Image (cartoon, rainbow, N blue to C red):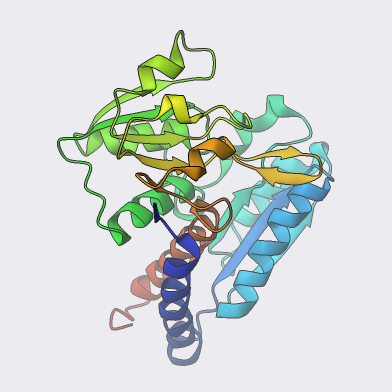
Length: 275
């Protein structure tokens, strides 16, 4: 078994990002800042927010969390859109009122939409970018491979499908209710699952020598778990993300990559193109 260790790659990226942020802060007095808007009070979401805060602290990017009510959502976005000290805005999903999701993510101005969720976002969505980094980092080639994406959600499946179709890859999109999914998936060389259904991808679903990327997240017995069943991880013929430390660490790194790029864009507009 070959492990796609995202933590290892993220450490290298983090070191580079820290140097870029120091240059922005020290040479150009541009202090990268990320604003997180949160309307749901839950232990799982609080954990995700803490991870982002911790990463920001490590590379000297300011992270400000706006924990607000649904009624304050749109006004908060409008305020942050025009705040010149804020370089990135993310809407921490899910929202307390899910009917606000489309309106909220599309209200973030494109140059600050570092999660890449709006229709006019200026950045690639963080998790698809992370998956790209992970495969490139371990020399997994998608050209002439049959690729399956399981899940078509807003955060992973849909933007990853858009990204890889634009790159010309041969891919098929499934969801957890697709007919005979276990049989169908056996045809594919690369499987990316991002449904949030524990144990959905079983060993019987995966062909010999396949690449498996588990980008699903859900809570089970108080733990965050993926979509890949434990029997898949007993096989030594696969290239696969580990149970922990696969896509997740790189997703946080990809988010901050976008924040830093947004801050660099500000520096560029000020004529500071030599960062």
